[in-house]
Length: 177
Image (cartoon, rainbow, N blue to C red; front, side, top):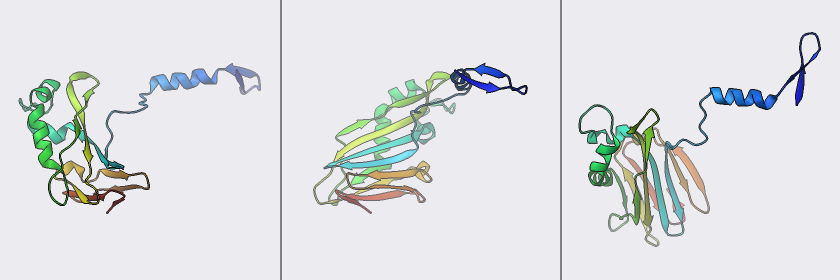
């Protein structure tokens, strides 16, 4: 237990941990929010991982009742259409053709006060990169302008703010342009 002195220089006991806990409990704190506003490209060996945080506004065209909220039900009912549309908005192309993901997921983050409403969507894909070929990542989504792009591989880490739309990033195993 620590002590501090009051104005009469008399010890006044307090528990610093208790003060810290009280302030923690009165403030909203998130150790890790589900939404990450980064566009992440990671290369490990011949694998490219793409991880993008999308706002619900990016897919609001799928809000069937046009109430300004995309619900879990609307998302689940149209998930294949959403995936197909995203494939037209976010593409990876090699020198010969478009790459198909080896793994694809769209985990959801819901509104805290209404668990049926989507707040954010993570777009996660994995690709096998062709050896010694350049691969181009392209996106038409207007919300990408202003997001941060993070590129990482075993040898380097690079981060920049995207200033143009459409976005285009060129990747080759071992390097990025």
